[in-house]
Image 1 (spheres, helix red, strand yellow):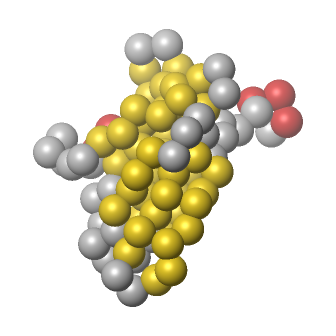
Image 2 (cartoon, one colour):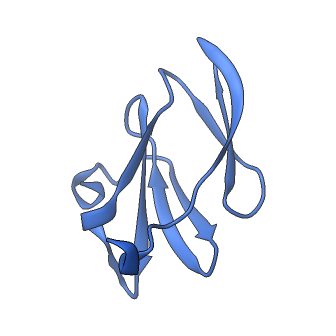
Length: 86
């Protein structure tokens, strides 16, 4: 999914534990996909509905603050899925 999104989107590189992920906000959903080597692992993309015109602010390792006019501000913790538990 992420590989198909427009390239002019505001993208975030996220450090999730010992891994790195790419986050993009094309609509009211924030898409996060772990980077695996030089490729993006599109099989385990996670999403979070954040509402229209949301702002994402980095809040430390594995954490993001989501601000939206239509909802309360919230701090979200994210992590990459453990492939061994699938």
